[in-house]
Length: 159
Length: 120
Image (cartoon, rainbow over all chains, first blue to last red; front, side, top):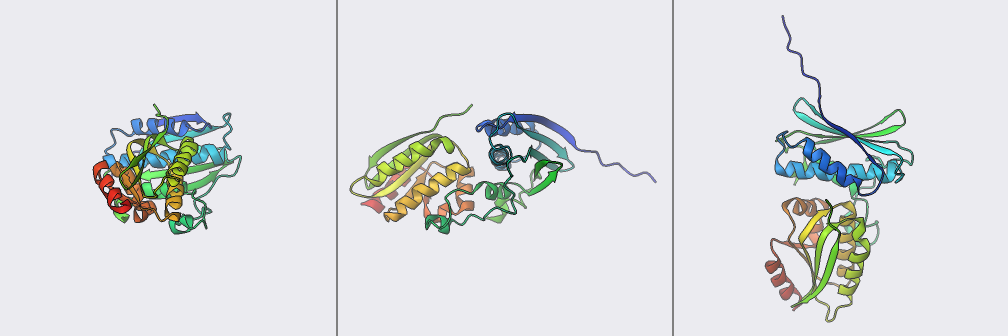
């Protein structure tokens, strides 16, 4: 009996950016170009762009401490029916993990009980279908997973 | 291609408009907070219109800045109205609950009417 083999992930892009504020926009643009033919709805694409920019900014500012000599690696794969964007930093300065992050509470922020900041990880989680975090060797890895054409796991469905 | 942030503070019937342009991110911190200060000092105190028509990008730092502007306006019991947000950023205003505190209008004219009603 023959079994059809599942194709492996298809690499759409792989690049690095220096840890300089502003390079999150470079990552955003390159990922958007790489996934342009993958069937994302315009709304999904906008959400993925926001998630990529915020994840890359966290890697630049927190993981790599804004040290321009440290790279942030971005890889885009198409795996089955999902798109996976992997953002890796050097974890030299302590990454902000989703688990450790304070949940932003707008009432508390408006009352001065919470900093106005702290929206990045919250937005990332809301913008894609799934977020995975891992430590691989000495590096901090975040994977953003989106299923084109399927808004069931995103903020679109949660609203 | 990035577009630097800019903001103009304009008196309108019933309040004041902050006309934002470019990218609302960390680089917008100083000019946006200065504009909010100027709006807060306007007399008589009326409603505040945040006009995003010419804004191309807002990141999490920009959201934090908008929270700061909103907090300041609420401390003065001012109504805050927004106009010109794209569908994506309207969704972000919903997710963050900014739209619970900022009345989001589809266009500048509707927002200006709301400011005139609220501030007049």
